[in-house]
Every structure is written in structure tokens, then in C-alpha cells.
Image (cartoon, rainbow, N blue to C red; front, top):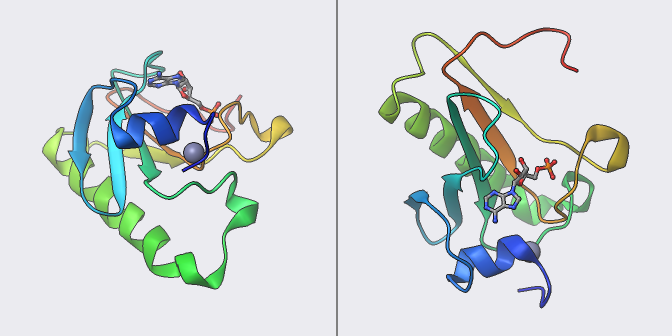
Length: 115
Ligand code: AMP
Ligand code: ZN
């Protein structure tokens, strides 16, 4: 755990979040400022700052996050219509929280190219 990391604090329960799924590897919770009717963040419990900090040790973890995303999408009724799974990496990518997270967005039409 990183001492002043917001998402580490959510992962251990020190800061409340509206959790939709959790297991020993990941936690998924509603984004506080939703950008779509369904907007869930999926984070690893382990502190990893950005996608660029991943190592081979995290290969299974990243696969697991994708399976969890698919499961949440089905449970929340956005799988058939479609959804988007997004990682914002570093500043120009739009990252503002420095703990790896994936945005699961659905419930509306997603535009392409993204803004
Ligand atoms: P990013 O721009 O990819 O770093 O995304 C960070 C996301 O975290 C944004 O969509 C924020 O709305 C969201 N966020 C920030 N603080 C919280 C919080 N306490 N609980 C839930 N989501 C949060
Ligand atoms: Zn963290």
C-alpha cells in the first residue's frame, strides 16, 4: 500500500466507496463522477502507479481484471449492447489518480475517436 494513495485507501476500506465487486486481487467500485450511466472503476489491490509500471509478474492480474470487467458488464446489463474498458495512462492520457485503474463505461453510445 502507498501511504497517500486514494485508491489504496479505498482498497483497504479506509475511504468508503460504492463497491460492486471485490476479491483477493481486485476491487471494483462506482466512479464518484460518472461519465456514463454505468461507470465502474476496477483496480488491483496492489499499488501500481501506471500501466507503464507493470511487470511480467502482473500478467495474470491484468487478465483477471479483464475477466472481472466482462463479468461486471454482464451483471450490470451492458454486455450485449456494448461497453468500453479504458485505461488512461500518464498526463496526456488523462490520468489523474496514480494507482492503476480501468474504467468500465456503458449504458450509452460511446463515441470514436474519444475526446
Ligand atoms: P483517471 O482520470 O483515469 O485517473 O480517473 C480517475 C477517476 O477516479 C475519475 O473518473 C474520478 O472521477 C474517479 N475518482 C476520484 N476520486 C474518487 C473516489 N473517491 N471514489 C470513486 N471514484 C473516484
Ligand atoms: Zn495505490
